[in-house]
Image (cartoon, rainbow, N blue to C red; front, side, top):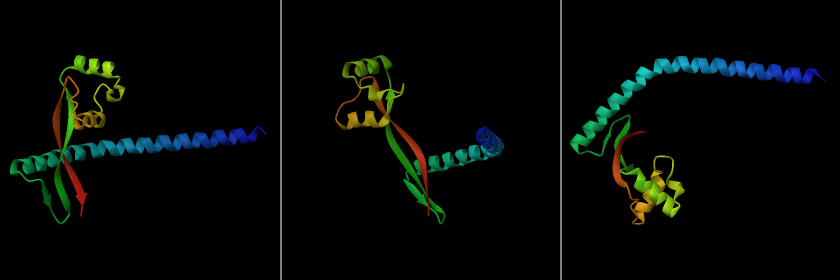
Length: 130
């Protein structure tokens, strides 16, 4: 009867050991990937800047399409006003110590601008393979 629990412990120990090895390998690969990710981020920012400067919304190549993506997100100008609104209207769905963009946008779409906020446009680059 005592042999079965020992086998489970061995199996779990083996799994933990395997997970540890995999995490270690991932950490090592991430160290190698980090400079490449930084370089890619810089190149993509240059592409985005070029598209915005040219007034273009997208560019298509044989490899795929880069397009400019914009989204309206909340920008809090006065947390005291936001907090007062949340408490008065019991709008706790707005909280995460940053506003939930979808809840904020739904109110904006309904004609309600949350006091203490203003709309800010975030511009990002989207990639879609051909």
